[in-house]
Image 1 (tube, rainbow, N blue to C red):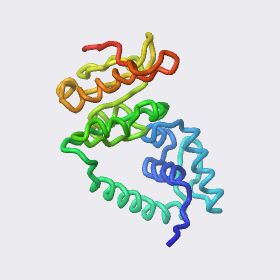
Image 2: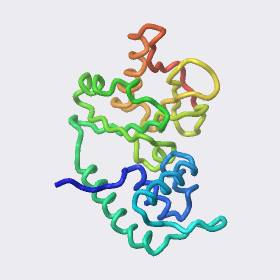
Image 3: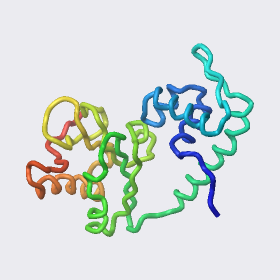
Image 4: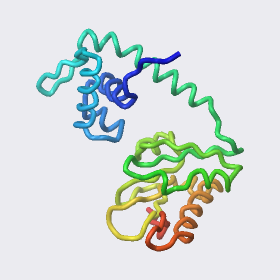
Length: 208
């Protein structure tokens, strides 16, 4: 059976905006800009030929069509989330890695990591941010920023100062074997690559 579905990103933008009744809050949840959420929703409305929101001054209101559409879309996402949660990556220990939206996952050589660490079941949430780490949705996070977060171990992923990519883990679990294995994996990637094509390298630790 072929399902006639709108683009997933547009549906996610609509569902988040409808729950929050705010493009700004939806953007924070989805790790994009409010303008991007607005564009996705507008594209969805154009595709469906139906207006889903009334856009008033500093206020977002669902139309009757939007109210009717939201429960089915939300339920669909719940089913997908539940089905995904039932899947367990191969490995005796599950490691959930969050990665910020601007990071190219190809830099991590994830398939090679899984092959080299058969005992670790690696699952990736992309995009993800600090609130996913704080809420326990991920165990480890590659985030963009300055790397200073009290209560967390922060390792620079690449050379340089100021804003950059950091590997962040709660201090209480930062030395767990599976997290240490991933941290060492990032360092090894850099050592194995020529300088011109160097992959991420952990170059320091910021303690708080």
